[in-house]
Amino acid sequence: MIDIFLLEAILNGILLGGVLALLALGLNIVFGVIDVVWICYAELIMFGMYGNYVLHKDLGWPLLLAFAVCVVVVAVLGVLLHWLVIRPVLGGAPINQLLVTGGVLTFMQALATLVFGIEFRNLGISMPSLELGEIFLSQSRIWACGVSLVAVALLWLFLKKTYLGTAIRAISQDREIMPLMGVKPGRIYLITSAIGGGLAGLAACLLVLQYDVHPAIGLTFGPITFMVCVMGGLGNLLGGFLAAFIFAQFIQVGGFYFELEWGYVFAFCFFIAMMFWRPQGLLGKRA
Amino acid sequence: MLRVEGVSAGYGSFQALFDVALAVEAGEAVAVIGPNGAGKTSLLRVVSKLIEPRTGTIDFDGHDLAGLGADEVTALGMAHVPEHRRLFAGLTVEENLRMGAFLPAARKQFSTRLEHVYELFPRLAERRDQIAGTLSGGEQQMCAIGRGLMSGPKLLLLDEPSAGLAPVIVQQVFDMVQRIRSEGFTVLIVEQNIQQVLRVVDRAYLLEVGRIKASGAASELLASDDIRRAYIGL
Image 1 (cartoon, each protein chain N blue to C red):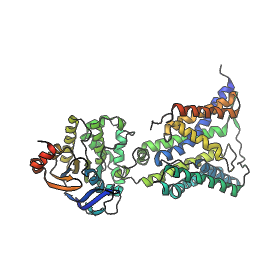
Image 2 (image 1 turned 180 degrees about the vertical axis):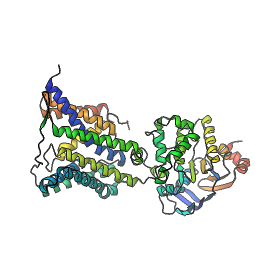
Image 3 (image 1 turned 60 degrees about the vertical axis):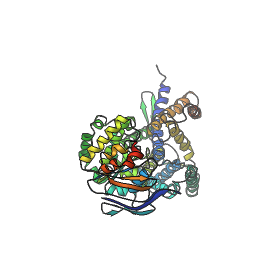
Image 4 (image 1 turned 60 degrees about the horizontal axis):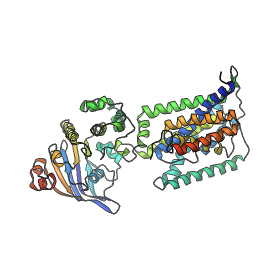
């Protein structure tokens, strides 16, 4: 008979995995298509969390309306990030692309501190736990995982079934000949940036139910998201999806046997070991 | 259909084409032949506007191509099947063909043209769900040409379709070109495989170190002693 608390930890790992998968997806699709890493990705999520806070808490908008507006606003932010910051350095050295998005990270953190101060804020919504026999699962986690998986499935359908989605997959394989298909790569980049931003905005809506927002919240999600992406093979959407669930199990089950913080230690040790064993990631191809 | 006049082009300080002129009439198949490094690929790249010419004019179907990008030239009805085939290796055969029909005008015709391409190349129909990177060289060439045809082009540019293929497959590729010709497509083809290409086209230009050195009916060039001696080895 399996320990009921271990079972709870595993289920929590699956729920966390769903959210990590969503987080990784936005970063991965942008990297896969544009070949640029949004170092400031988690700060886009922070921006979306503050947006939810302002709209719902300060302005009193209904929660779902605030969610919808935040997804759109962060998607637009993704487009602006590409248009204003990345596009001018696209032809430049990769290090410059990292530096400019790193600059945006610092800028957004500082801006959040100026506008909102350093205190922790939350929406003040607490959902009851779901009781399954003797197992207790947080409802906000269940929602977050469910919505994440639906978003991942919809995006997969979009990439697989539409002309635009096929072009997004194609451009990551051969950029130079896309114009011969009548495709303007610049337009695909903007659409991909909007998708990446929109996913960050959606992640913000799901995370704001579980976490307080503060100017350094990006540090909570950023490193994990990068590690999930790298472990799956940067730019590989399926690899990132699998890695998210593996990572989440390390965190939750490791945290169950020892203490919560140890879960992260195990996850990061596993990540380091993986980098020796498969530096190209789970499903990545060796360069 | 296509009129190229006084075109020079290159990359950085390297000049690949010097004052090149050529023309292709509607319904014709024209070849540009010449040795490796003569500038044949550069010529096609300049015609489809993957690279901008330094001087000269290119007129396609009544449009001056000056200032247009390759995507706009594709929309005008030119399909460039690039050197080395350049399939989207991780996509399936049918997804590659779908990319060829990306333009809104082509999307409407997708299913009729797809059927047509499958009729032309039944092997592709058998392998429609196969990942393109796992096809054999000849099949990849079919897929690349099929992808070009999916846009319903007025002019098809073929860059060395026989390159890198086994001799028995090379013959099949020229049979394919023959089949496409008989469908009424206008074709501009660049080839090193001079003897075989001259048998499937109407006219040809000889390009050497970036300059047109000779031109004429394919049968004349095939019979020309100079060309036979220099390129065919007879």
